[in-house]
Amino acid sequence: MWAQGYDPFGNPLLSTLTAAVPVVVLLGCIAFLKMKAHVAALLGIASSLIVAIFAFGMPTGMATTAAAFGAAYGLMPIGWIILNVIFLYRLTEQRGQFRILQDSIAAITPDRRLQLLLIAFGFGAFFEGAAGFGTPVAVTGAMLIGLGFTPLAASGLSLIANTAPVAFGALGTPVLALASVTGLDLFELSGMVGRQLPFFSVIVPFWLICAFAGWRGMLQVWPAILVAGVAFAIPQYIVSNFHGPWLVDIIASICSMGALTLFLRVWQPASIWRSTKRGEAHDGPLAEAATNTYTSEQVFKAWLPWIVLSVCVFLWGIPQVKAWLDSVFTLSIPVGGLHQLVQKVPPVVATATAESAIYNFNLLSMTGTGILLASIISSVLMKFSFREFARQYVATLVIVRWSLLTIAAMLALGYVTRYSGADATMGLAFAQTGWLYPLFGTMLGWLGVALTGSDTASNVLFGGLQKITSEQLGLNPVLMAAANSSGGVMGKMIDAQSIVVASTATRWYGHESEILRYVFFHSIALALLVSLLVLGQAYVWPLTALVH
Image (cartoon, rainbow, N blue to C red; front, side, top):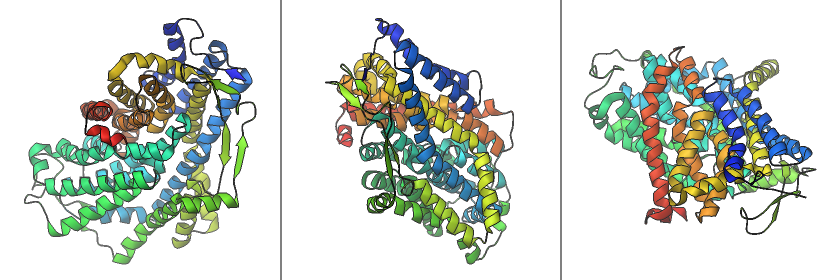
């Protein structure tokens, strides 16, 4: 048994600065040295091991085992999700189905503002829910360029739209990781995030169209914006609170796009914007995609893989189905050399508590396995041969290899920080902000995503810190852990990785600084609004009712 120590140098300031070294290394390498994410993550895990072993006195075997435990969780189940959903996307692209899907969305309305709402907000949220990790920005940015949007508008607007859905992205991956590193109940965290973000699911569509068309242009289509936002926010709340984090974005985005499409059958704005610039509402030509005609059978076939995906993921999210799959096959492996051997001690906990370390290898019930099944079914429907299927899968694995390495290294860093007690040391320091902590804690999540490029990574880095600090201050730890994720989503639009993805998708290489300037104010302003909401949830009635 090894007991954690939270002030190894007998100096709280020096101990806190040392505990923060891995975070500073990771964020500094990404933000200032412009290193690739996987290189920065590997340097981060190396520094976390050095700090854990030589500063906090954690036995070498325990520290390396904690890193391996975190990396294993990063690959299975999290990396398993990313690999298979990107594989499905590539299959649809290979058969030209994705192009038909793109054109079917654009043909619903000739108005650029409403096309933007459907694609960047609605369809982008669907891809955030299914894949996350930059996929929605890449897809929607390319689609908007295809419809005639300027590279700056396509890049910046895709980034602004990709905010409110992020906390439930990649089938709930950020919330799943948050529950893993904090030990808090997954469904409580999902419900809390689902009582914070729906407000912004209504605000962000208005914000998006205002950023593109200005205040007057936004007011001309406000009924459609309201329909899209409310039709997203209500399912987001219901699914996150009564089902879990897995299908939130997929269901909410389908509801939003469906409601907006039906609404546009009976309502159109008085002034149709056919151009991508302000002041040219009637001058531009119709998008080329809008003139294409497809049969209903072609459109249905294009949507079919994503319908199959939604059905499979929904089934995998049903507790009874998950329990049955676990009964068929599951391995619960106590991590030797770590399980019940690390002891948390006061003042972090009331009484000394041994930390568990059990790796659950439940391959059949992993969400990624459901996605793989959807990919297999879709490949049959699209008439892929086994050889083509295998070749595409290998190609996808090559494409996402660095993403998988990054995820594994991020989780490894988070687990070493957690088991060494370094997160507790930082948490005790943050507790000094007192009653304003809900404000600062939420902005900490924003900073984490802005610098790491991932709500999942930010939750892994700071989730434990949020829990510990809130407990020290007598706040609800679920509130502040959720606030880390909810605040973090507003940092997504300014992180270096997302901006590079946007510039690549829109073929606007070398203009990343212009994209950053375009979105920076929007990111700061929305993050402050989330912070104020969380501050209100902590202290101000009736917002305090949202905590329970």
